[in-house]
Image 1 (tube, rainbow, N blue to C red):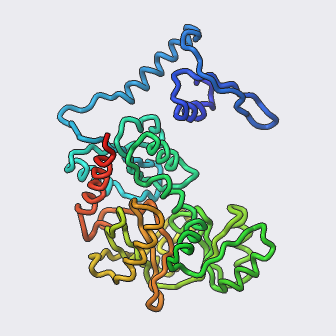
Image 2 (cartoon, one colour):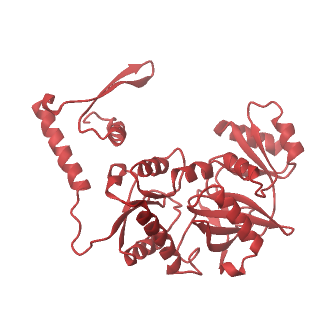
Length: 372
């Protein structure tokens, strides 16, 4: 497409249909454009200038997709590592990503970084490892779904993304399977009794969560009715459903990493100084977080591990980070993350290279199980 402003639409159409030449008819309807028709277009009917443009585009695409492999780099399998170069708080830092690549290489695999622009390249790979913050509404879910359709081994798989990124759905799922969680109620903007429900079932202080928030974004604490009404004005504008939970003050949250239904790592994440959350978002745009402690799994109380496994098993058999609190001897699940942070000198502080080896070995095991 040479028409300014339509590059993004052209890319999305090609990613979806993968047809060399597509004819798209769009028309203006009131204040917006609407797609009227999408059909394959015969190459021979292109004008000479259009054929030149097509030849240039084909050459660019072919050079990108059918890149010649580097000599002496014959890997048994190729894995794609999806990262977002523009993300401010990615789930893995650059050293951790490098460690994943080294672990893959030790197993005879090549782990290669791709970006949100590379959806059309997924067919080159045997597996997809997503290391960008997942959400149903962004590119990560599209990549996971496309990779799954192509037969790739995917972490995070689309079902896990769907279950974990919606806090309302996740809370209901855990409650259904009798996994202990804080006292919770779903507040609906169209329910005239939502205020009464919140005060009677939860009480103050309470925590309010937007269903699809990440890294403590869209999570607020309210101490009284006035604060609740003020905050809900803003939150209901973002979502018709808001999760309200009892406030459980603790010095730290447990984070148990789980891979293929087995515990992988254990951390204590301490609250940000003078704040009730691990991550504190300042008005300046700065984000601070509390300290951490990484432990041998043998040092973790058995009931913490047991509850974490029970929660993660409701999601699937992928890679998860389960956040839990211990309150008066009781363990409750705060949330399950389908895309847990794995940073150098944090989550890997106890296992070191073994953590990266275990994740890559799981990819290798699953690829070999596919039987093709």
